[in-house]
Amino acid sequence: MSGPRDILDEFEQQKRAPRYREVAVALGMVIEDRATGFCGDVVKLSTEAVTLRDRSGGHRHFRYKPGGFLIAGKPVSLIRPPDNVIREPKITNSGSVASARSPVARVAAASRIWVEGKHDAELVEHVWGDDLRELGIVVEPLHGIDHLVEATLEFGPSPERRLGVLVDHLVAGSKERRLADAAMSGQRHVLVRLLAPGAATGAVERRHLRGLGGRPVHVLAAPAESCSVVR
Image 1 (cartoon, rainbow, N blue to C red):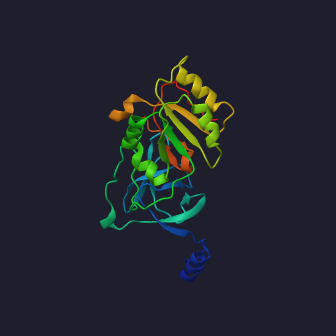
Image 2 (spheres, rainbow, N blue to C red; image 1 turned 45 degrees about the horizontal axis):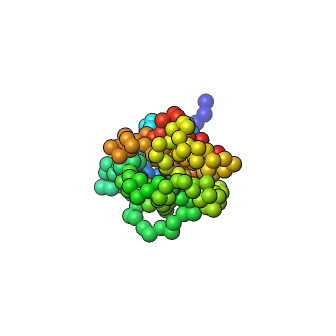
Image 3 (cartoon, one colour; image 1 turned 90 degrees about the vertical axis):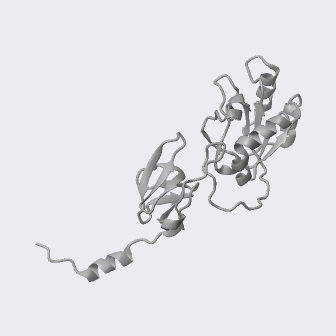
């Protein structure tokens, strides 16, 4: 039979335990639970647990534990927020959680989103403006897509310089569909999607695209017949 545990032995074990970087948890952070591999953005905080939302919109709650989470692939210990800073998250028009950080001036990213005209740009600003500003992604009107192929070649898409194009009337056999197919032909970093009218009323599919900016971005819903293949 083993004797009583020595408090000095417990102290030595604690000293030998690995130490993890401490990170103050905040709404909107993207983290992964090490034990389960569940990954998502923080949508709710308490002094006991953190709630994550994954790509499909599922929610799970995880208690704080030393080294229990991953941020950018590195194990960390999340610091519990004080009671006086816990509040309901602010939701943007796209359905994402607004960053808890104060907005700061950001240098524009190399990637771009193109739309056909001014009204389309206003629609994107209304729905995704907060998300795109945080990522530094600029939305530019094309004033028509007749020269989409030439403009795409001139832009020169690359892994660091991705291009998203939102187009109306993207249906089989249409001029817009033929131009979209031609613009994506041979291009690995171009995405052409239908600009969904339902987005104006908030009928937006919550879906993550890890492309522009390297972080989850909510993108427009598109029917199955739209041209939506990422090459």
